[in-house]
Image: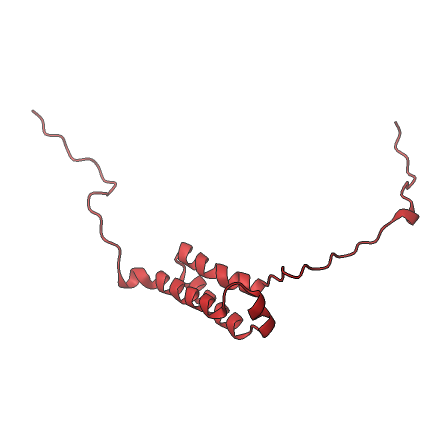
Length: 116
């Protein structure tokens, strides 16, 4: 079967793209998503820079929320600020409460066996 160079699309059947209308209950904002996931990332990685970024970002999103976003969000702004401060405290926790030193878990050679 030979390929033909003729365009078989009919211009009268072309339907232009129309973006679907957003649903009433699905007004998800990027700021609320980031302000709730950055503290978790700081806790999991124990990275202080991510912890500070989560504090700054959550305070910024808390101060910038409007009446409409307050009604539609599931968590209040001060809750995300509290989570980010707690995540920052977790990143600095090993500095104030160092982990216990475990003895006998080194990777050195085994103890010699006494000869009989």
